[in-house]
Length: 303
Ligand SMILES: NC(=O)c1ccc[n+]([C@@H]2O[C@H](COP(=O)([O-])OP(=O)(O)OC[C@H]3O[C@@H](n4cnc5c(N)ncnc54)[C@H](OP(=O)(O)O)[C@@H]3O)[C@@H](O)[C@H]2O)c1
Image (tube, rainbow, N blue to C red; front, top):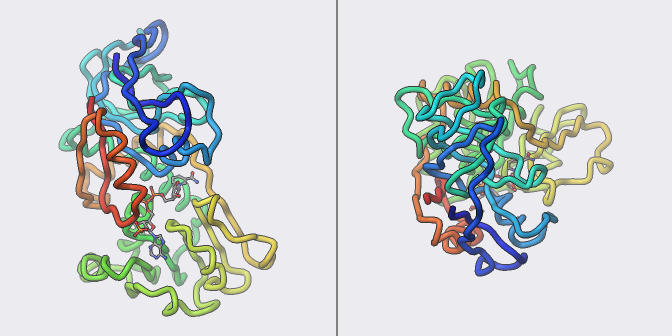
């Protein structure tokens, strides 16, 4: 079978379409991949920024149909499913024609959601879900969301802008301002859309959520406030402000979260992101587009 992987780390040119044996079925649920999303972690793994064992197949997200279902798994051949793999921990990447999963980490794709739409959801949606669980007490709080237009940021914005009792300001790039001002208008929660970090007031927020990697805005949170980041390579030093409750999120595989993200998307509570679909052979081009910065929506690779 074909799979997007690498035998050495480096620039996008190290990506290859490898010819690998199909996974052993046995007790695993085998999914025939329809689409696998590209995420920043794939770029960091390919470049060697995050160490990985080689050869490696890349990819954390996928959606497809069940090719083999073990007895008692709750799935049947042909079921439409989405799944997330912690590629760095398991060594199992999603960018292969067939991928074997523990059925406990696979969810059905709800009716009304296309497989390509589902493939864009797992890592970004589950990360956003787990981050929001770490800030349960948001009512009445003033929140800054940095990078609302990004993969994870857009999931966070989709949820926060519907909370009438919080005031969430969004920080986006200047070119994203018109789109996000329009998205902001008419939503129940209050708040502004900012496009310049200089507009962000020092100590002005109860909660700062950094989904863009802007450590200088650690100052935006008030003393005894909370700062949550998902970007370990561009995170502030928590020791610089010990009076702030600091959280670095590390996403965890969780089937319930995957189910809730998929069901929310089917109900329309998810970012309306443009999907760009490329074949496995164009994986290097996909990485170049993301690495350049300024890419919007989700990029999917299809076998
Ligand atoms: N800890 C975890 O478990 C976890 C899970 C998922 C993702 N992550 C990490 O979290 C980060 C975001 O992931 P993602 O999938 O959301 O990536 P993404 O789609 O690239 O989103 C990041 C967004 O932040 C924006 N941004 C950067 N600097 C900004 C600034 N000064 N002002 C406004 N916006 C700014 C980027 O805009 P430009 O494109 O214009 O630069 C981009 O739209 C990545 O580093 C990823 O590896 C971590």
